[in-house]
Amino acid sequence: MIEKYSKVAVIGAGTMGNGIAHVFAQTGYDVTLIDINAAALERAVSTISKNLDRMAAKEKITEADKAATLKQITTSTDLAGSLKDRDLVVEAATENLDLKLKIFRDMDANAPAGAILATNTSSISITKIAAVTKRPSQVIGMHFMNPVPVMLLIEVIRGFDTTDAVLSDIMELSKDLGKVPVEVNDYPGFVANRILMPMINEAIYTLYEGVAGKEEIDTVMKLGMNHPMGPLTLADFIGLDVCLAILEVLYTGFGNPKYAPCPLLVNMVNAGHLGRKTGRGFYDYSK
Ligand code: NAD
Image (cartoon, rainbow, N blue to C red; front, side, top):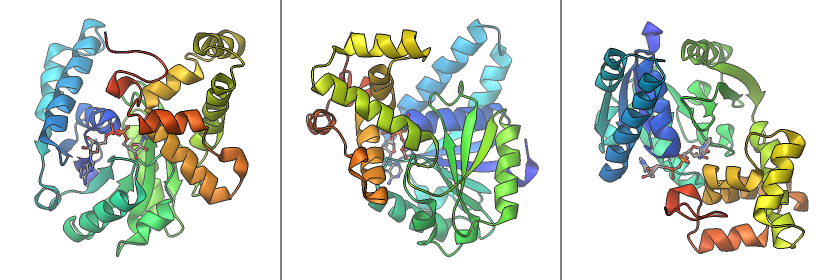
């Protein structure tokens, strides 16, 4: 644990926020997990507990490690009141520009002047987010991968004004979490989603145009390209709303029609079929 950043807050307790809180807590950081929705906080703690059970069953950690990790996490629905003593705040709320700008204004107003403000955004400009704060040099992207406790990569995104010192501290901190950080610059989709989302979108177009069925498309990519999971399964896992939001950022950011989201993806999001988290996406998860 890096003492200088021992007190961390994670904002947003959804798919990503619970995993981010988990890895910080397991490395010994004092974590406050914040969400506007109290039920999301309860679900997050229960998910962390189940994931720790799974690790204990595989003898990767002991029961004592599990208890110690859970002890490091407190939850809150009061953002302003919870940031006063935090050294690092990682925002992992819903992928929506206006929401993130609002949260960053609140983070800036309530976190100590020296604190680093990080965002786990998949695609929104770090520079644009930083510009609404009075400390753009201390704003950075920390793009964890899903599921956070398992995936090694953190894409560390440098905004236009991020200083070398902040970048270097976040690279070190990422290594301290047992992750592999990769430094990238702030352009739409960064590296991961600039390459991944056009592939997922093309898989959805392939289904939409009736070239093949969903299982067939996933099987081609799994067995033919050695991908651990097919692109439609992966889209369900990420969340179809998240995929759509990222494609829209790529589409408007580059002004290139090759990033236009497939109408089938748009329809599914409008219908509320967002993948695993709603029980239905390209596949059925209701059972
Ligand atoms: P999610 O929908 O699972 O969770 C978002 C959470 O944010 C919800 O619990 C919601 O209640 C909370 N929230 C909304 N408004 C809030 C506010 N004002 N204050 C506090 N909490 C608020 O979303 P997710 O998939 O966890 O995505 C979170 C972020 O991580 C997004 O920026 C997304 O692009 C990014 N991301 C997602 C993935 C993925 O695979 N899902 C991967 C990498 C990065």
